[in-house]
Length: 353
Image (tube, rainbow, N blue to C red):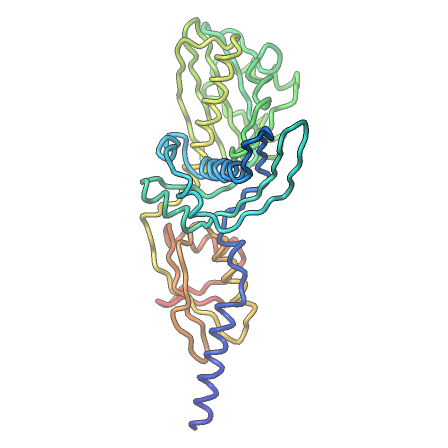
């Protein structure tokens, strides 16, 4: 009996060691920002470390701007370099070269997710999950008396929308192709266009996400009614911009950037992580399948809504995981279903079957 008990303790300890050291947490628990391009004149006082530090700053802001809403940008403007460095796990110089008396650097930086989220929580900022998504975007300019419109030709927003995009932006925009049939259809609906759902047009593009912007152009003001659709939501936005002339390049660029910020913020709000909510969830997995446990840990590492997890205990049948989740129980269950995990929730301690 003592011999059997000793063997059980030995193999339990061995299993724990394997669980703790067999995964590859660095990649899964980090944010990877690659292809940060920096160039500096190669002069007498040239300092390569300063260039790398600038790369750290650029990588940090690229990451943070993809995580937070535009209204929170100012909250992180004053961050110090040593704070940024404290959140870096690793970095790598992908390429460096000298061209025309200039030093060019391509940098990759890996940030610790937990430290990033903790920093944002201290700043009272709720981050979002980084989900890049494609949206069909239809901008329609309607003159102030409401009797004419522009979709393709004579539409500077359509012509310039994708001219400048920022790396941190999550939405990839697909503009509709010039289609006379669509143009005539929209003209037919002009009288009640604010209530039209555009489904006859959007369904042609086989995208689950679309944004329709009705841009009412006046002498001194631009009023914009936007309908944002995805597979679960319909969101309506009303915005107005005074003293804007969309025929002026500066005003046009300002309007486009403002609209993109509104759309990005809406998308981020839909995917927000409430770090103030930490729901404890206990899950057990049979310990006779090491690969299943390893895969589950990798899955937990990849889910931004998982604040933390650890092995609570281990017995001869099961490994028990304690998980802190930034969301609702149903949200966690939905994520598990999407990843094809068969979760038995009938008892207090859930089980992966």
